[in-house]
Image (cartoon, rainbow, N blue to C red; front, side):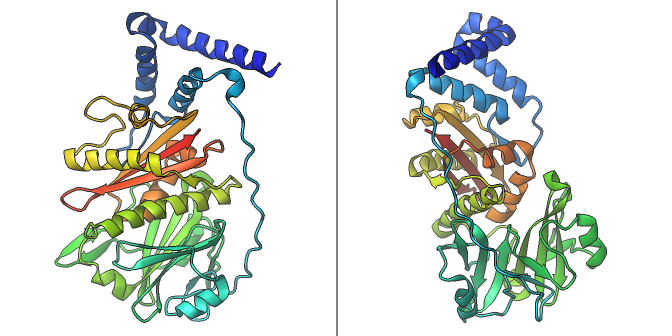
Length: 380
């Protein structure tokens, strides 16, 4: 019965494609019809810094193409992973600073942190030349900490409900409440002899200078413009960063890649979705595309040879039933790239697609140290 149902659904989908794009299919074959479909989707995308592979509709088409290579009765459905709920720690108002993350403040020690949260799951290099240490329990109660040479906390980040403040600001607080309680946000930062403008064209974040630290509060446009994440950086650490972009290197590349992976999983857990696994093969596909964009100075899902993300996966002999790609470029950190992608509906849908199973991330830098980020999502 299920096989018959799948056949009927497949016929209906193909009939819809033929009705809307039959002329293209007649002229150039099935792939031409899909290209026309993709072009229609791309025509409504207007994002110079972030772009998603053909948005939701083309993901459906690529999934359909993949399914044609299998028999209907072998396309198995996998049960979504059941994640055991972990109790959230009781949060207290900060003792000294205006903000804390999981009751941790700038200036606390690594021993203090790990007495509360245990050992970090991984540590990776960030744009400040120190490591982000990621703490979580299967991506629940997720936060990251940066330490100085004396193991003192000099950086904090979370995108989960672990924010405390003396002003009562927490995850879910409306932006209007934040701006009403805080001082004027920072509009520029001095790096070397150059001032860099701090701006969010879409109002997606505000940066505040307070108590010898820089506090960046991120807002979620798709959750009624409420607080979704916070980053706190010690002022000395921020001021020692000499440029807008950090100096590129293998450590920073690897750091940005794994940080984007962790940030995506933490966001999925916020929405009661399964955790993605790391796919090292499609990571290579993503890495090659980021490098190609960086070297040849373009920004597009279609490379200079005319290949789509799905063509590149096919070239790399990666099989999938469903796939998606997110791109970002020019954000100076994995955190800003992730938060920007989450505020763009097509990218958000890829990050929060309930049927995706794995993710590979590839990052590359151009000659000016500008990062290019590629996320490739798969269901096999």
